[in-house]
Length: 383
Ligand SMILES: *Cc1c(COP(=O)(O)O)cnc(C)c1O
Image (cartoon, rainbow, N blue to C red; front, side):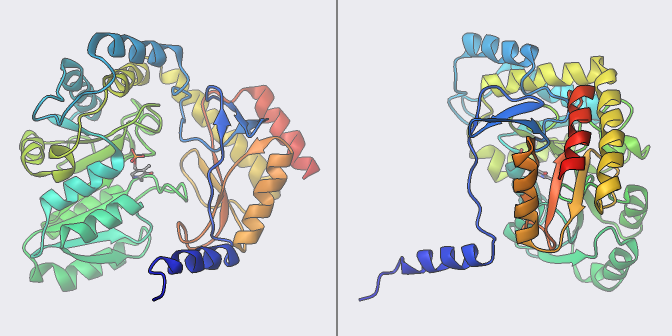
């Protein structure tokens, strides 16, 4: 008899050999523009906390207050015992930010994508997505049972070609795309994509995970950035990046949201968002609305860091606070990450299979100080 689990260790050995193996890093203390990683203080270019809200006193206080009022857990699915007044308040705040009729919060962005796609399309339908889409869009499409096709990254000609040859064979069609590509930092060509969707009678699901709170004059995301507010499309995002909390959302028309409340399995059959996460997200949206200067600082810092990195490295094209240094191999990425870490800089190596080519990824924050950026500049010279 052979051990039915023996393949696990063989697979792990293969991952190690390919330099694809991943492991956790322990961060102690409160998050911010400096984090303590395994005992060492590092300038933090590794978080998705673009506005620096995850460590903000107001979010922390809101989470404490909600916990005092409602307890730690929401105790059930939203349709049973898991719905509180703050869930409705958060959904209204999201709809107001996105200027949609309604919104629905999920326990994570990943669950929002999986549940929404599964609710919208099935066996008789087609999903066409950008090849660099986030895992949650890709896995959601597969789980839905629809036919799934990728189009070349931000290539509208390829998308048009696929719609031209495929659309007629299917009942419904859904186009999916990240708006800010999470591992590259570039933007989807939204206006052209919406025009194609209209031409081919396709629904559009945009993933604003890295755009909400960051892009657009009011921080509503890439939809606002391109002046597409009010167009019929489905916007999802997360509460766990610029909003500093945990959870996901979908924003769109009232019938869409009503339908998802009835048909999205990852919303119906899971416990409602905790009071603490819900209240922290409400506080974050308030800050996004009230403090546009945070976004200005974020973009100033982004321009500064981009100039510094570009002087020394090949930086991938980016229109967001995500800046990537292109590298030749996973080993190169791991070694450069280690050299940066030795100099007090925390920026993660991103390797296959997450991305096709290895890179070092920097996420800029509004709360990086001029001193920290100056320090970064002097360190670059030493590298
Ligand atoms: C992070 C991310 C998600 C998942 O959001 P979570 O709330 O962390 O589950 C979905 N899509 C994209 C593009 C992301 O970057």
